[in-house]
Length: 445
Image (cartoon, rainbow, N blue to C red; front, side, top):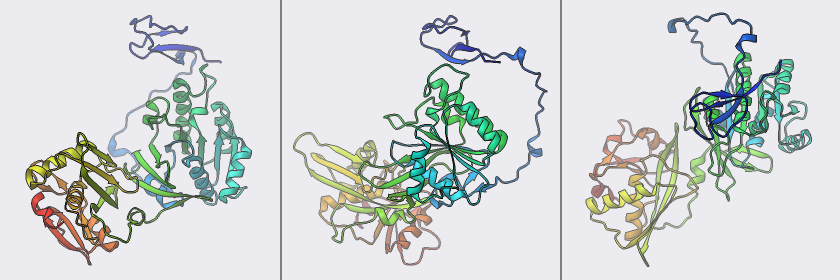
């Protein structure tokens, strides 16, 4: 029996069978959204469900399937979980389809069935890409379809264990009359796929378009419906791709994986710190190395600062660092260390396109500013990290010992850190210098 279309007000819940600009219930304009009529009278009676005690729930660990891509497995929390829904977003051409096709090729020998559903390209185009990437032609099954009902019929018949939907914005269900890509179609199509995945323990990876602001297109509820949300990020002129988990029900959020785009697809970058620290042979003033944490991974990055005479009103410009944070640090520098940048332009940059969201780089920023003001290069073997407070104190940061181990692994001989971050057992090969005040810390620069 064909379902009847209704329009429901998102504010008061009133419904009507004809679309109107104004809600007949509350009178608010543009609040009606397309939906399916709940015809409970024609449905069979559903048996009552009973709650269960938390102590009686089976707490067996989730069985994960490794994708054979260490960087992706790190972001996913160890691999794909049966019945999990993963949403992968990113700008056009960044490599979403390439990565997922490679993943299916890696899993084809260990997983009974994998399926790639394309709604934007023909099967011929996908097969050509698979050939270019070196994916075995007979290992991945392809399906060109955008109708959700047809896709679910194939899933019921073929019973694949891992499915890629490229992309969710091209899918549509006949239960709704709106065009593919609309809010209602994206939400209902995703809901149908989520129900199938949970009921049949199928891992589904959804490709999502993004808006010009970088957010995944469609209703915001889409990110709430899925288990994991991954974002692909990259600078326009760089061949490196960063994949970041912003939501993960089966692992830690904010984990980061790094890939490099090559002629044969994406390959993992096992040592990202070495890439971001590709400095020149000559020492220059205003360059300081710090270590930040992306999820559970310590990452060495270079911070550069430039101070110059202002030709007009002084400017404060940053790349990869919050500009308001820089203004606050400069005020602390003046108040508690007696170093003024009044009447000077101050520029701060994180090399490699990395964006630092934590406060562990505060001390490194001030060290870079001090270095460029004094026209004195910082020792290349010095690692600097620590949070700076408004009272001029150097506050500890989490994971201090892991940061020191990462610095020692890359050949740093000294580390300027908060006193509270001095470990009981110092990693071999590195001398730890503990500081508690900004003025005292800058004496080492």
